[in-house]
Length: 93
Image (cartoon, rainbow, N blue to C red; front, side, top):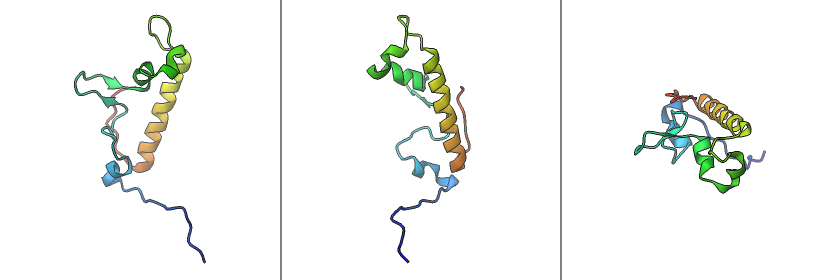
């Protein structure tokens, strides 16, 4: 009987940082900039990336699609945290 080529990895809630190396905010909803105290949410990121420029009006307000995309990403992040057994310390929606 052959071995599977797909490596499996057990998720240990007590060591959640090991499953997302490099993520400074494993237990939060969004990373908070330590200098400004502002959350780095999806819309904040999108404002810095030219691929999303059409999703903002002249005043810099996000489109309805961008707001929905942010909520979708937050739901997905919370699902990943739950699957990993991470105790959330949310910083807002």
